[in-house]
Amino acid sequence: MSQPLQQVSSNSEDELLSEFSNILTPKIDSMGDSQEISDTELSGQFEKRIERTTSDSVTGEEDEKEQMQKLRSAINCHQDEFEVLHDRIQSLKSRVFDLEFEAQEYRNEI
Image (tube, rainbow, N blue to C red; front, side):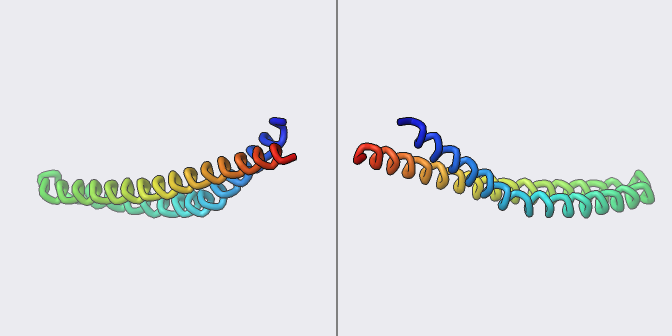
């Protein structure tokens, strides 16, 4: 009796994994590209800092503020992606519950 129920869950898990793969693969690929860009930007900024005199603390503070702003922006972007994924997970869990309920009703009719 619980065998068909497990089958539904297994299929739902496969669907979940497929959905995550479809969502995350492009994100991960684009994150790799953005990381390369960030590394290049950071490398360039590091070289600029070396060229500057150490007594130029105002510029150093501005660079630090700029870096903090970039980090905050990246964090906000990741939080938005997390919320989208969380909502999608909840939707899929709800669908699994509905399918399990329908399967149970079908078994009761038989």
